[in-house]
Image (cartoon, rainbow over all chains, first blue to last red):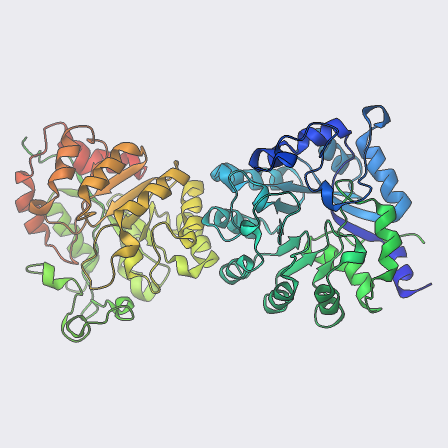
Length: 304
Length: 291
């Protein structure tokens, strides 16, 4: 068994997972992106065309026709069992996610996403979900908001303060987004100010930080509570800066996340994963331990 | 138009007399640059005020202040307090021993980040404070009213259901006014419509803009701190007499810069209409500060 295989056999945490949806439902889901787009390929896409606004970047995006759909919780759980995912953070803002965390509390954990355009309602939303669920993550997609809200915008500040108060990690996409929306609100440099003003905030980047990965590594080293998660990136595209950082001073700072079912299959992820040149000691931290610590997930014994 | 004498005035800015030599504005020195302020002024805005009070309070400043309040018909006063026993001892004792006469406010410094947010919550829980207060131009570094650093404080005020009283307009001390430009309040009231925002220290020279905003934003209020009644801006008095009777509140400035004697000598000449007086002197504060 290679160190990677041994680490994987000990369990894998995926910190950002969606439930399978039919193609029609996925198309509807992305309405929020079409709303903020100006290019006709995105904006005017009909069902069956550019259903996934970042679809131009991805090969073999998972798709289900309506007739193929079963119970999404069961579908995802089976997928996880098949690929050795032992714990996962899912959205609990709909019935499906809520059922998942209630029925399979050892496996599924609660996350929400927020929109600072909602003002105090967004702040209260965090309190509400933290009271009702054991909330593990609060997520945001600054470029995908309408209107867009920059990571260092004052509208985010009460959200950050609330995440600190309820001790939940804040996860945000950072770097140039796939959908044809402006990148400015998620420029990696904006994170510096946030980490300075809120040193207690656990801030986890999502979606790559590209092309500012050298800057991301600088900031990851500088700010103790800043973390990087690999959402939306197939392992063959993990940035060299980040792998290098994970192998040197950042073993505790880089966290595996997939992109199922939005853009990547687990088959592809775990086919490519063994080729990522992480050093031996990094693998268990990357696949599981860092996520468990940062998101306060229980350590889970995996029967091997 | 006659000022009533029996309404039980609420004063939204009053303090126990300074202990001997303790009128310190040390916090401002880092921002001041002019020699006169640094070397000669005892009170950094003293060039604007005649006869800054120097009361001889004896060994019981709380008793002394109560006597002053009784003399001028002030039923309740809002005192700035902090957790620092050495700085706030008299005020803390006043709140504790005379809860029917005093209520507290906590001065916040958004430069302190989450510690400021946590202190505010603790001050409400442990000291029963009824408001936050802030002096944006007097902070070091200065923090504009619409700055991101203020936003977690505003959110916490909403959660705690307390107003925040903020100095607005050109400040007396010789520091830049930009952080207190009245126009900045618009954005805050837009983003936090639930926030009860009470201006302090006059809003001058943008009193017309202040009135526009007071009319526009239901939870924006004006308090008259640091202004002798003869200098209450005309636009504000007119607003109180027309559509703003519920939005303008009395706050003094004793003993920082004005004597109660002067305030209440000039007060009857303010041309408020009859129905405005009780609201101005008491009822608006009772409602906004939930007394």
